[in-house]
Image 1 (cartoon, rainbow, N blue to C red):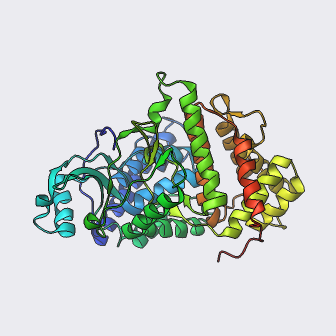
Image 2: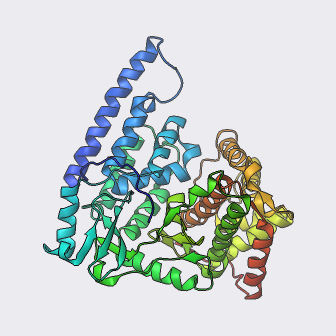
Length: 455
């Protein structure tokens, strides 16, 4: 699919007991490191601020250990880094942010064991070529290239052993360890976020579900000639292996290079943002992981979407609420914004006025690219920095410590993540026109029912 990165290798701890021991070992090492750091600070050496459990080597140790564990532990770290970075100590946020890039790869002996269990002892006879060096490694599995004896070029997503059956225990044990280390603030209720992480992980570890997502998304995008979704190959797909077409291209991030003209970056960013809005208001189906690694710039100029593990289906009424919220925001109607924000659960009638107004300010920032009728210049925008400052003010000045409602996490992550992609691409996009076209179609269909309970 793309040029291979040099990936670290480490054996995946596959049993629940082994993974629990690994977490216990991590907690012990962090406690020892934290005690040593505390003594250094008490003696006047080193900074006095911040959590000593997460300073320097300890922060790096946390990220390195979660990366080597893969599975739920690594995914929870990624999710926390994305959704709760403003509620975490800076050292923790910085350490966990490194988990967004890549995990360790399995050593070849462990990989062969997984493939024998999935395809039988004679599996190599089905391939003319199989590359044991992975093209990519993430939290749930790693990707290998192979060419079958009948000439099909496949990308094979191979799940790490033990991650599916250890999801609940991994998440619970890691959350307990992070709370004990005071990495997760004790006065913030992270339980809904943790339960949402479990749900997402179960979906991502279910390759039959991801295969169905790929088929469904391919059908939804049949009219998008500039987008390619790889086809699933059922005869090589099992519970632990997802086989799909290998797409040839380079990471979308390559467009950031100076050899690419502005019009190419603008075209790609416009396409990505149009896809987001179609997901919200047309498909009601979200590819909810807007990571550069999940998009390929193909050699013919099209964009390949190569990961649907994080597919999510929001209710039609939630999408309708977001349509009303976006419309109120671009119209500058604060009363309507407050009404819909309460409906979704961002604020409650009991919230202090300053905190509620801070949330509305943050919503206005989050929809800022849609306000400009002349097109929005993401390349010169400092929107991410201003949004972070507003989030920090909401927490530390107004004491607003409530995480967003779990059903909204995927929609917010996709929108904010796509904006960040547009910023990285230094693109100029007529975002308001794209939004108004989608809202006009959505409202013409009459999909404006009040938000139903999501449990």
